[in-house]
Image (cartoon, rainbow, N blue to C red; front, side, top):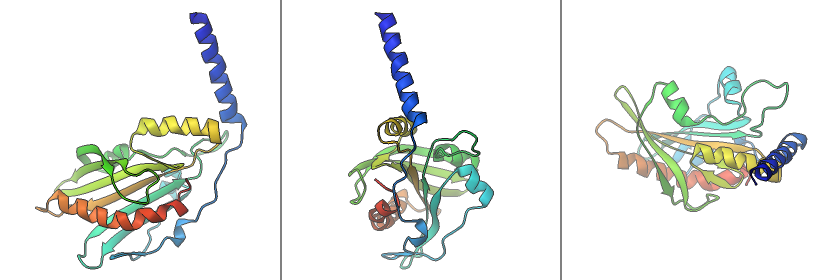
Length: 220
């Protein structure tokens, strides 16, 4: 019996590897982030930022939106990053990394300490899954504090967990020949003495304007 189970597992693995490596990936059509609007309600992106070419190569990102959105009424600021990866499979002979980098690994590398972390349901219309579970971090660097919301938006799903992202990546590669995906991150400064709830509300205000626009840029 054990031998049969091992044999079936071996055959299944060979079947998957064949489909994973021997078929061409599907790259769905999409709109590039260069056309993403600069004004969303009372929020304005005054200038889209450009990532240093060396860092862009490290990230392995195909297209991205990187901008500080400023609230025209409150003068509040929220940093937004949406990075789209057309493929998360490294081809033979290619250079660089294509897999999306988890923020919980990148933030400490940038000098931010994670002092609070949890997952919660985000109830915003326009997301592929509604409501959807996302990550909410509170990070600190010296006296600075930030509230960070992030999730993976990949092939019609909202994913909070790193391990689920990897599982779905392998399943979708075998079933649909797609490995494209994206990371969505909002970074909201928390002024000294201000409650976290204020940053939460500002996030919800901008996210409610921005999230419904993402399907054009991030294929489902």
